[in-house]
Image (tube, rainbow, N blue to C red):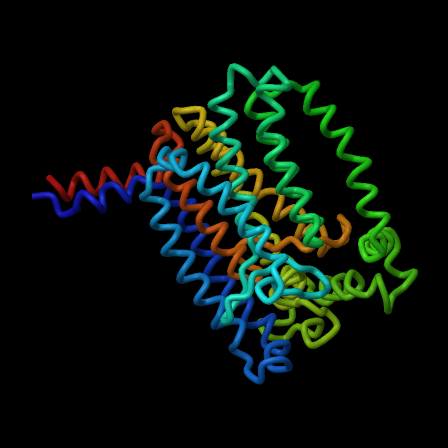
Amino acid sequence: MPIASKEYTLFSKVDRPLLYAVLFLMVSGVLFVFSASSSFSLRYTGSIYTYAMKQLLFVCVGIVIMVFMARYSYSRLRNWIKPLVFLTFVLLLLVFVPGLGSIRGGARRWISLGFFDVNPAEFAKLVVVIYLAHILTKKQHKLKNFTFGFLPPLLIVTAMFFIILMQSGFSIATLLLAVGLIMFFVGGASIKHLLSVGLLSLPVLVTFVIQVTYRKARILSFLNPWDDPYGRGYHLIQSYRAFANAGWWGKGLGNSLQKLGPLPTPHTDFIYAVITEEMGLLLALGLLGVYIFIFLRAFLIARHVKDPFGQLLGYGIASLLGLHVMLNIGVTTGVLPPTGVSLPFLSYGGSSLVMFSCAMGILLNLSTHTEEEVRGTWQKVHEDFQTHLDE
């Protein structure tokens, strides 16, 4: 008599190593946000638990969304393309509505909902991935034609890019454009068209950097932070000090010195520096290894999905995750200029966490439609054991 329900059997087909890796990061994120934000939270809210409790709520919501998307057939997302794109544009524009849009650090990126703020640009990145996976598959036979195949989807991505840029979201806008170009490449667009767009984009991006004072200052601070150690180079130097204080084993959970004031955003953009200072270089490298594992797993899942839409969707999600991790860790280690890109599942923030939870749910659903070898040895052993029990 079978002891497993039909629903359990269906859900057990997902890529379990990927699921466990994501859950590990989610749970770790709550712990590290609590440690990194405790001093900051006490200073601004009167309680050391404020940001950690919010992060815990975001994780609970994220898990529910991830489970739902893991069970929701990814192919049905194509039916929602037009409403999703339209809603995304509406939300991006609502940021500019007085009284509704919220300003932080001079950037207007959030819609205020009272208890927390929503950043529509975070969700726009995933919507672009879904939209391009659909449209590039649909227009596969026209992609080499610039006017009727390549240009229409490019205009949608470009429109979102400029709206986000107007919100002072240069890093998110650039990341969105980069993911879009990767998907065009994987989808079979003409290399000549992609190179043309890339070359035309560079002067635009450079202009937006050098004509805005704080963006120019970020580049200068990256090139030599010691020229202005108490000004534009301050954040990066404090991040360096966090790594210098770490050693192999760290100072111990909760014992970071840099989170006490020197790092202005210890629980968001620079959380990886705080984690390294407290837990040591070995654990920091271990976390990087988990991200690399998820990226490679996503890449393999995408490679073995049976239909072109699913393949592009998987490659887009893998690219989105990989670029986020590369940019965030690159900034905290001084390899890349400072940007406002979160570290998936570890940085504090509901919009980013929910978006990536949704993306991982879609990826888990994709994993149920792959060739057998991708599902992994552990899953096969589990299924053989379950068959024994059923007999």
